[in-house]
Every structure is written in C-alpha cells, then in structure tokens.
Image (tube, rainbow, N blue to C red; front, side, top):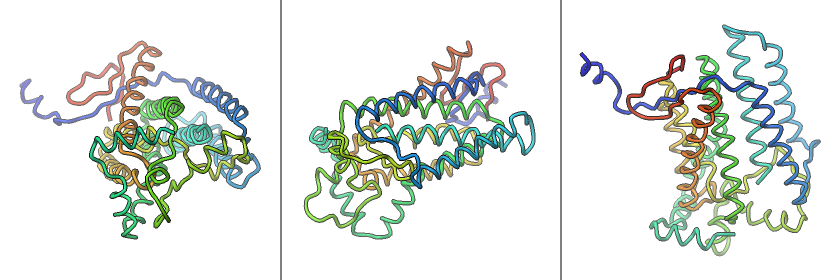
Length: 326
C-alpha cells in the first residue's frame, strides 16, 4: 500500500510551504526603509526624482488606485471581493519593489573572458538576431515577460487564496533585488553590446547602450531627474531578468493551470536575455544563483518569523500542519 501511494506522487514536484506569517504592516515598513535607503543613494549620486513627470504620475496613479481598492475591500474575506483585494495588494507591492530596484541601480573584460571560457559567442548570437526581424520581434516580446508573469502569478494567488505563496514571491523578489544591487556595486559593466561590438549597430536591442550612456553621467552627476515611466535597468551582472525567470517558474510550479505556460514564457525570456538585455552568459548564470539564494533566504526568514519549518523542495515533501500545497 505504501509503495502504491509513492507511485502516485509525481516524480518532480516543487512544493512551497510558507506560513501566512507576514503582516502587511511589516512589509510596508520594510519597503519604507528600502525607500529611504534608495533616496539616500540617489541624493548622494546626483540624480533626483521627477515626481511630476508623465511616467511618474502614471505609476503613482496606478499605485493610488490599487491602494484605494485594497483599503476599500480590507474587510473582505471571501468571494470576488477577497480576490480583488488580494490582487490589488500583491500587484501594488510588486510594482513598488520593481520601481525601487530600477531607481537604485566596468567589469566587462573579466565577464567577456569568462564567457569565452564557457564557449559562449555573444557576437554570433547577436548577429543571428540582427539578421532576422522575426527574431527581433519575438525577442522583444519575450523579454517583456518580466512584467507579464507576475500579473499571472498574482491573479492565480488571489483567485486561489494562496496568500502565503504571494508573500513568498514578494519577499524573494525583494531579497533578490537587494542581492543583485549589492553585487552590481562590485562589478559594474556596460554590457557586451557596448564592449564587444565595433562599428555601426545594425539592431538596437531593448536595453540598448543604456549602461554605457548613463553610468558616466551618474558618476559626474550630470544626469537629469529620473522619470519613473522611463527607467531602464542599469545592472548588467548579475542578470535580474534571469533571476526573475527562475523565481516566476518556481513560484508558479504549484499551480497546475499556469505551470507550463509560465515555464514556456520564462524560458523564452531567458533565450531573449543575452541580446535584448545585452547580458553576458555569466551574467545569466549569476542571476540563477541569486534566485536560488533568495529562495533559500526567504524560506529561512519565514521559518524564523513563524517558528515553523518552511520547505522549498522537489519530490515528495512533508508539509507542515496548516500549510497550503496547491
């Protein structure tokens, strides 16, 4: 009988057990502290924030609407109202963390040398994409999935009432951002397009030459105020797109209806990242490790806060009492 039960368990099954132990007030307090740190960094590096810029106003309006919805439905406990309340909360927190990451953020010879040792030819990859417009369009769409997958996840979490999974994603994403920005300080890079390519650029990827153009301006404090609607990622290594792809796939694994669509979307994003994100292969490998560390730290943090053992594992797992396994 025991053997029969074992055979019924899928051979590979990721399960995340995180208690609903984080109060919303704790998460808001953590984000306030993060905001203060980012504000100090921005003040010390020169650029301010164009709070009245069109892009900034759009994001502030979205956050205001989500906040109002969350507050208006704060007592909802079931049905559509509860789903809408949770979706507004998860999406608002995710957007806020994403804006902090983008607002906060030259080791190219070393990174290029590591890629050569890994037998990865970035120039050949770029030339292939530059030669085929269809690959360019597909790459841009796939690279933008960093914004689509979290919406799918938040909707699924809100619909199923998986509050603990939403908290795991939010905390993991936040910790991954902190780790990424910390590592970026030790190895700032302009990316392979600016460093390796010589001559006119036949195809300008999504990230373009943003790092090479802005980093010197930030250093000499000649850059203008930042518009939240026109932020571009400054971090070359490690790749935060790669980090996000791993987080999205792991967090979505427990929801059967969105599991494989998320794997397909994020696998495509990983394939598009070298060119559209102008990343070295080693950047992406580093991003994968950042995601793994962030997941482990999230499990440890929530374990300490709740006093229960949290699991992020594969295979047949023993779940703590009261934990949700979707």
